[in-house]
Length: 189
Image (cartoon, rainbow, N blue to C red; front, top):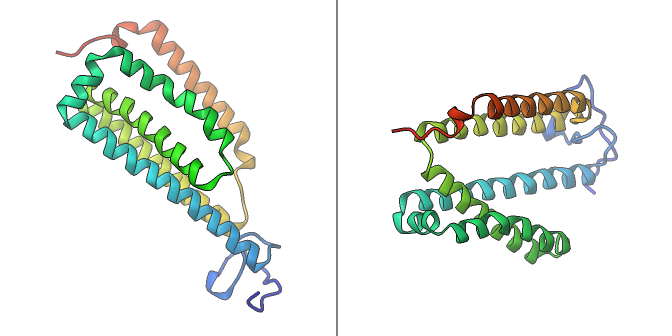
């Protein structure tokens, strides 16, 4: 395509300007497709985070919407189940380009409304802590993804560690719910 038949990856370093590929053994065209896919995924993720931030902020700061959602438990319950219902058309139209993004946007907006109500009913320090922790995890995974992509590595070796971390998280959550319910359901003054 660009005169590259294949450039070897010497010394584990990747020089994108010299035309080295994303993964060893890939052609330049396949390399461009993979980088395009990674950019597309992170672009969609960034759009979802921005949409969630905007809708949640409006829900928290604009009291008529907040009061409507807090005062109408039927509407809030519907908004909680709507993302589950939207999974069906999202699966059906996953290969139809404009529709899949429309359903993903609706899915994100409905989740954003419930996140906004949760933020409005929670202490601001807890929301800030969740924002910082989530940002740290997303940033570190993004950095690792770009680094690992350049080095030709993937997440396959992390399977046992991720499973162990999930079990620890679930067990810790269960212990918190069972042994300290007064802390979970305590209304701050």
